[in-house]
Length: 308
Image 1 (spheres, one colour):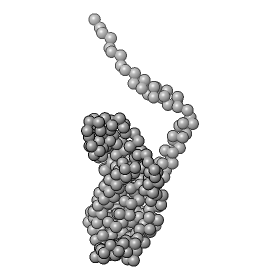
Image 2 (cartoon, helix red, strand yellow; image 1 turned 90 degrees about the vertical axis):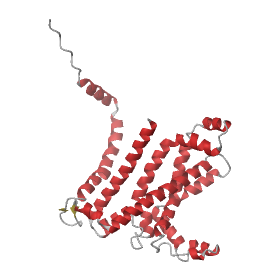
Image 3 (tube, helix red, strand yellow; image 1 turned 90 degrees about the horizontal axis):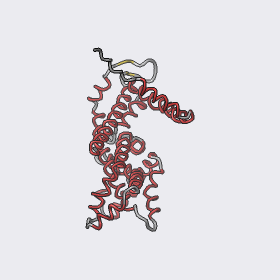
Image 4 (cartoon, one colour; image 1 turned 180 degrees about the vertical axis):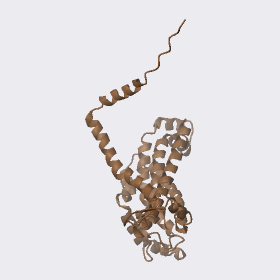
């Protein structure tokens, strides 16, 4: 007795359903979707791909590029200025990210309440974000000048031993620039957390208060866990901003004195556009890209595992 072979599933069915769904979308919607993608591909992804290929060459912008394989990357490992830039970037990520997030979150919690003048305080804290990083750097250069307000204030407080040429001292120049960058970034982080705090369920916090939880316990156990989505955004923004910081450092110190404030971004610019060593500068750009991707993907994977 023969048995009929089982019918094979129709592999075209999912494709047909997908195509039917695509055809239901109006043409205008596809235009609005595909046009930004095309612009992004032309202005962002294509130059990024060229940067990868350029990092494998030696090129000064004139004539044909000379392929050198991974020589630019091996040279980076032995480059003392690159090593200094990596160390400074680690300090920058920790200091810039940590301080701006902690202060911004604290400001958001303090100002997340109705009251007279609250809007004015929020606007005042956010105001530095209105100015460009270059203008911020020039403003802080005046503050840090030998006869500027910082040294004058220390003199009035009787702390003359603390007075110094802040941007000319290799031991403190990086931290002086870091303070200026954090001062500008705090308002942006505060706004992100204020938006997140608006979505926190107040009834849970009220119930915890009735059960006897103090303010810190309510924040740590009730409020902060509900800010997980905002934390992911803040982390991504902070890491990217830390790795691509350029304007404020270049405006204040240009990587000096003696390369003590050199970051990966400033060293990339110096190699690529000052020394016109475009292949070497592209290799540094690739390193910055890979570091940013590694940080963000690692954090997102850990967050997804925590949610599961």
